[in-house]
Image (cartoon, rainbow, N blue to C red):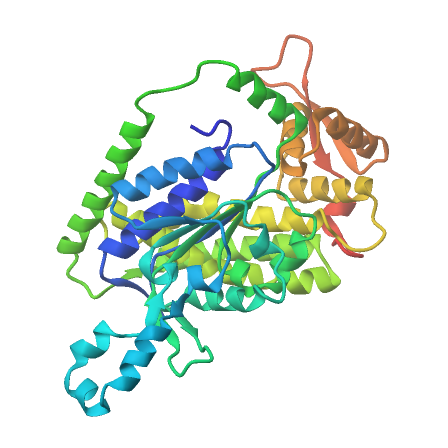
Length: 433
């Protein structure tokens, strides 16, 4: 339904399946002294007309088929999200003797003045074009802080109004927010605790990708079975989780020692990449993100195990979710690299990104043609611009070319492989990344 949005699809499926497990599976995840639930949230940033609406449309089909209550909100207001107070009911309560309310709790419930918002009624809230969330003003800042508590475990909403009755209730909500690219987002990402509780995907579209999308949209790529298959999948997931809930005899699901070791290895890898790529204030604000990823990994891995009918989180489950977590961390790193403060030119920033991509690659390096494609996708630059920067880095000695012939090499023409000069492998990148 949403062409060339495979990353978006994987992120959305992860959030949808986490809500299905959260609703139908009673045992929690026991990690140390904490008990986690399964729900995840997502902030998706991509350009206009890149398929965000189409992708979320399929998500809504899936959720509805699985019995997950969702709503799309266009207004970012307290009344819609959190709730309001019915002043007429307050008058009614004041007219009833306190002892009558005390002896008749059902009567108190009937005239309860609190009208809960969608954080109480819905399990998934879609914010399409959620610019207000990302660029808060003094009227929405308080709402963001309330949403932050709603995404914690357990989720809780509390707002004290001028009236004597506060709005207060438990919530099981997930947020799926989409918006186009905003230049100031990197600062909000680092400052707002809400977005540190969400998966983030920055999905860049290069001119070449846009041209490929336009060409495909002019063809007949429709499939009348798309909605039917999505609805069938939603019902199947609900049934799988419901059966797992009956079969599970434990109060909690727990990880194996192998799973713990794999999570540590994954987090250590992220930590090392950030330390090698950033310094100063950029390093300081980015270091908490791998730490915050740990709970996200456990939630994703637990969903993997439960959908497979197992009640122990194994190493295979951590391996299953590595791609999702890598997309999340890479989106944040790429976003910060694109907005490094100081006098760095676009040329220098792009070179830093190329060095970051090549640092983990050992051996003879990566084929030059493959590097062009990966850098273009990672930086969001067109292919011609990518080639110019890489060729300049080769000429300056930052990148090394090695020729190697293998079984797939054309006769007489060995492949060219690119690797980092040894000085970049040993030295950390400083001065703002």
